[in-house]
Length: 109
Image (tube, one colour):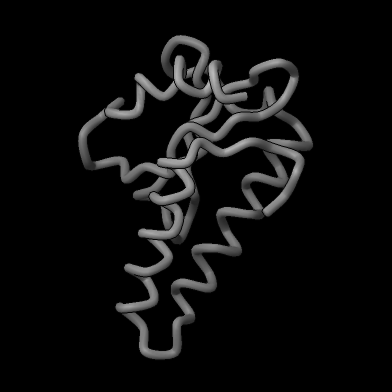
């Protein structure tokens, strides 16, 4: 886990859930490996250039994991000059369910 960003515990669990799901889909775990690699490639880009993605709601930015995993996105904010990942969310499920994490993350980090 990189020290370049903070990740809300629920977002960490969502990441692990997605990896477990993709591991169950492909016997050789290739989808799980690709998903995790994609996630960290996007977090590297976000940390390198936090303003790269537009604000979608309040102070939260959204990076869609394109092209292969475009149904997932990373919701993040910049707090105390550090990237805070609020959710690793599926775009078709419960929009903005993670909103309460904004305040929680400000208290945590």
